[in-house]
Image (cartoon, rainbow, N blue to C red; front, side, top):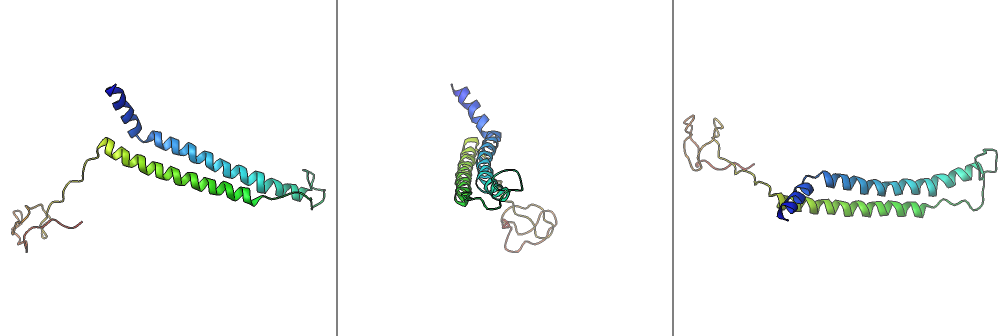
Length: 143
């Protein structure tokens, strides 16, 4: 059972799974925006312009044709909520993945000679490479 869980951890840690899931979720939410735009704004506008049909010779004013900006704004707000939740989920998974995989810590900075930029031991007062004096002893550079 332990081998099975190790394989599952490796599968999740690859990142391709999360990328694909985020793409599917955001794509579905964006599809809702496009559908709302066409159903609630573009189609009623076309109906208004054409007079209720595809024949452009009809009347320009059609009673009862409503452009529903509220439904379109609702679709945009729903998209933003879904995107925010997916963003937080990805942040959580990335943090979990870092602890799961055990990222290597960054190597400690090494002091360098200010004259020749070669590595020197911390606390040295002279560089072993160029014999230049290191005022105050070799310190780890702030980077």
